[in-house]
Length: 369
Image 1 (cartoon, rainbow, N blue to C red):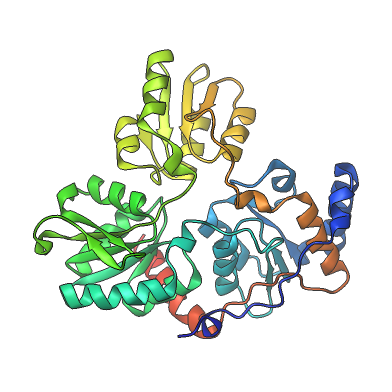
Image 2 (tube, helix red, strand yellow; image 1 turned 120 degrees about the vertical axis):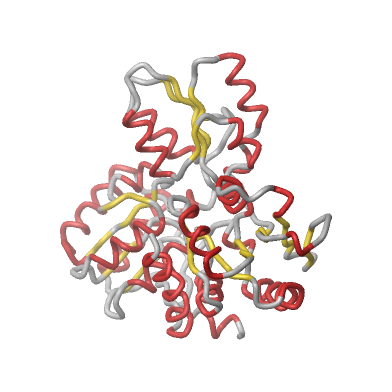
């Protein structure tokens, strides 16, 4: 398929420079006015990693799939202004009705991990892998992937996974086929498979740039093939960060996201999804100490909301996710003022054929968790 057959986007608009000179107070007041004006016709989902200046106006906060599902369940909303990144807005468009319009305030808000697996690379990899292993592979993709990759997985019998249900979905996948191709995050795939008892020597890496399998040994021993992709935020947490915490704060708990490397997860006290991390911190006893290995906006919010505990970032030099931070108050206001004028700025439209196949992958996940 050609790229234009996969995704059909409206014209991409750029925010006028005039929004950069508005005061925060002025912008916040206008957002409130427009939200009140549209009422239930407007719905703003906000991802956990978004800036506080945006999250304050979110009607619901959560992870990517949770927000898309919430949008789909809100039948009153005509306009869904998704404060997250591109693949999240795609999922929301696929799960909502044709009458509902999904907008992304800034089309530059992407995900480096999702971009590490494009459909051309994946089709090319599948051809080579099925030549090597025959009909023994089932593809799984993290929901942090493009609609086109979800559709690829759907039409090849596979499913999507989240960081919360990855273990359960790998268990299901192994009842279907002998081997798993896990896209696009190698770390979540490796950590989950390892927890299931798959030894590291039975995991291989697929390098999409070189279009080759990276593995030493008998390829018949391979049962998990990990796409060579990663989260640029979570890969920056290191064992050295953990050793520093252990030496200076030996009584501090270390909790990380499974998008971190195997070594970091192995040396931490706890590892789990964003929801797992939030729930763990909120339920922790007053006075406990926590070093958190995940996105900085969320860590800062947890610090603000749990001042009875000592909370730090596992990496003190960590920056917020750059692409998540593309959506700010000016872009949110610009999108809402566009709606007020009857304009649909940066509407996300996924084609029917991609939607049909991608929803197959999503539904297989929902049926098995």
